[in-house]
Image (cartoon, rainbow, N blue to C red; front, side, top):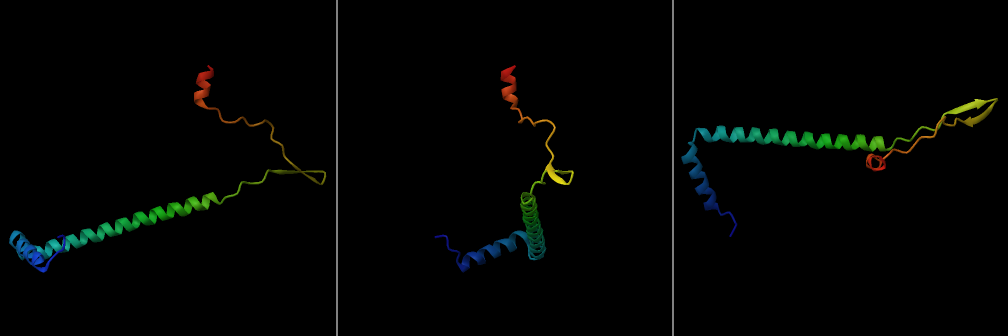
Amino acid sequence: MGALKPWHIAVLVVVLILLFGAKRLPDAARSLGRSLRIIKAETKSLQDDDRDLAEKADAQAGYQPLPPQQQYVQGQQQYAQPQQPVAPPADPVQRVREN
């Protein structure tokens, strides 16, 4: 039932010629082609942007943390100890409940 028969296309062409005229149809087809070309270029650039963001995220995920700073004391190698212990980040909701 959904098949497009050749006579359907012929009727559609006749209706388009009657509605728009023979002079306007080439201009309309040309502008439709330009619009489709612009849409295609924009979707391709969006896909390229997504791919670039994914590559940057992958590159950043591959970074290794720096080793601790080393100090040389009398020819021996020792790791520098932090001066103060770092407190874990506090939960703001928990802080409000405690107060």
